[in-house]
Image (cartoon, rainbow, N blue to C red; front, side, top):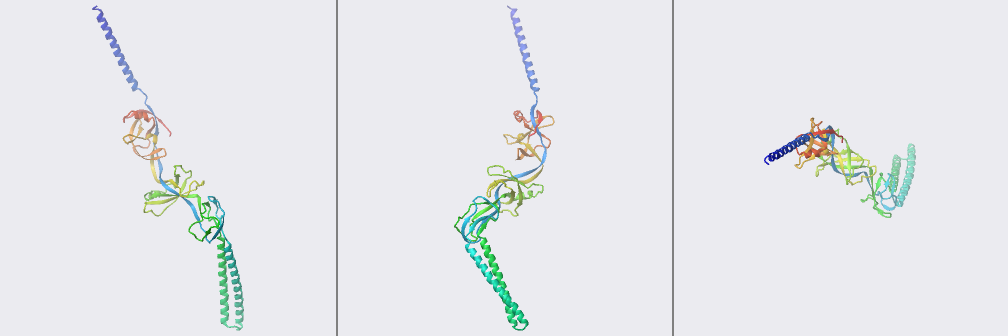
Length: 378
């Protein structure tokens, strides 16, 4: 019995040693395998600089290119209306007919008075000629000659006055036909047939507005006027409708007002849009994007590369020449499409990570992390 126990002890010790050596070998193999893990694959974009035109989004109102308030120039009863409310009319189209009876009579009376004046002028002219012939024979006095000559001139002046009265009567008669002074869309009529209207009345009969083209009036802070005088700035303006829908057309800045609103400290800018489909209507509220500043050597960073930390910091992962990515604090100012305008923290030619960032974030370290960068086009 005394010989068996040492043998068993030897076997137990040998087994323990084998297990210990095996465990150590497994740990060393796992560590080696972990150290040989391939670097994280990430997509990168190389930063470039460009000249960038910044635009401000400002509230604006649409106004008609031309507006004509239709008022009668003579008084009378409206006999007929010739347009459909809301329709498009052309310059010269007949809109209303005022009862012309009284004005036709006035014209006839003026023409009759003109005929009388012409007859009197003819008689006075003949008499003046005869008196001049008689004066050569000393048959009449010089005073009579002068009187006849003055009477002829007076009669000629009466003819001119009568002619002017005829023209005025003819013009008043033409005013009984109210026509469109401009082309555009006509609004509702404020009167109906049979209504009495007065010359130069305060209330318009209707309004015509030209909707193609139209103006968009923008209020802008006066302090920005100096930067707008940069000759390299474009004059293109785009607008969004009240619901955020972009308007397809691009407008052109026409002018900036020469005075500043003392109450708001703003100036008025006016842009012109073709408005071919009449989408923009007078009085409509829109948001206009107006050129404001030209930035040379601007750097735009893809939005995928920019992250905000819980601490409020803005960071990006930058890949160096040694193919390692490191977190860096950056400062961005405004969104330009799907990119951020960089203010500080990055340089032209540096590569920023745009895909695979989640794997880098899981490392929770600011130390460089080996990566396998692949250039990506966005």
